[in-house]
Length: 518
Image (cartoon, rainbow, N blue to C red):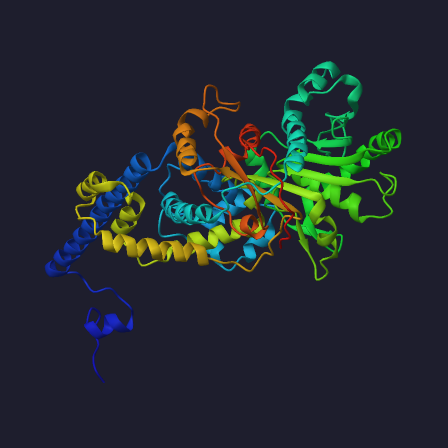
């Protein structure tokens, strides 16, 4: 039998004892500790350099409107970070902080448990870079002449005036002031609902008025004053409606409006049997107007109107609100009666739960591209000319390889364009879409130059040259399938920008035939 003494090697192994350290062991341990500390110091230096690099990107190469757009997108995703944060981006802390009621986002793949490797602002800037180029190519392919008759546009433009002025009108408690703001007389206002205080169910603000010029009883639904509120509201699930599915929150608002407005609509229609009914609004007000119109058109037993009363809708900047089922009868019935206007890069007509999820998929796909930080930096700063390349080379310590940049730009564009999600079905626009865009590249450039002065203000910019716009027909899918991160995504949604776009359309005596879409 082997005599195993305490302290012997085999004894220590058997009893799980730690061997006494000799001088060599202690020296090696100190070296190991110093190496680990050195690695941490190096990592801190590298992280600081990377953060400094991305700060340079933000401050020198991202415009103020783009920063505003990125902040806005972070609110869409519910990010707890600000645009100046360079921490990793976790879906677990983004979608859920502002959209906690959307529980099924947790089922969007397994992305909510995975961090992005690249800072959020960098991913957004890269996605914007690709979408800018894709948007430019799309605009170049659009018709250069308007595709609407002068008579139709004049009628829609008149409804636009009510949709835009109802915001200010709703703030006044004096009937005379409300009428003046809306551009009608007091006796032309049939009913108002500008205060729901004390009600158990929220009802969007609205006014019913008479427009004798177009022989219309007009129901004007007001939207919200906050664009951020709009985006939070549109990122929601849907429920059954007219054989398809409608945005749940907006549908409930539409039904509340119709319940309260029905007596006034019916009374006005009976007093003016030769008049039709037009429902209009901007933003969430427009989305509500669409669903009210669909209810009036498709529910044959609805008591709000006498049988045979003409009904139409003019909707400015609505989010997607409806998805038909296997039967397209509802869409076929309402498509020609709902006229939807989308201005430039307005993000709200492109915003839904599904499009927000697709944007996240695009961010994830871009984050997975095999690109170094330097290559990403070169992508973001590309297109600035030789002087810009020299600055970039000085910052990164590497020469800009234009051939490599071009290849990576194509890869970036393809990645963003092909990003997809199938977890959430896409809502669509249930009507004809009229797209308003600047008539020339010069007008587009002028728009960009006016951004810095006009963006911070909530009213009409003063002293600017009026731009010329074209209005063309587009399909719903061009707007409902992708949430874009573009310079004017927030600005183009504002009601005064819609006024400017409408006022910039010159048709003369132009007449065009109706086109069938979708």
